[in-house]
Image (cartoon, rainbow, N blue to C red; front, side, top):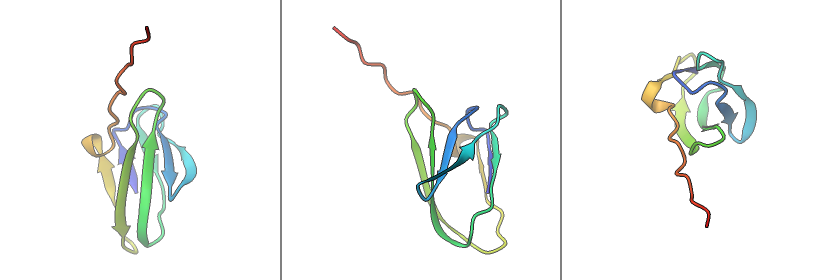
Length: 79
């Protein structure tokens, strides 16, 4: 899997296991075994994004820009 365009230091989990973070350039590369897997992307102050898909042996999957962007969490006002 090739992740490009993520926010810098976005944390990445594969099937619930923390496997690292995107670089300051928003890039992260990883090898995923064949099968159905879940990628979770998170960063403080942003809503998490979950991507679930099937990965075939030898397939290169590119997740770029909009597919990996996180939305800012709405700020809550305190009384």
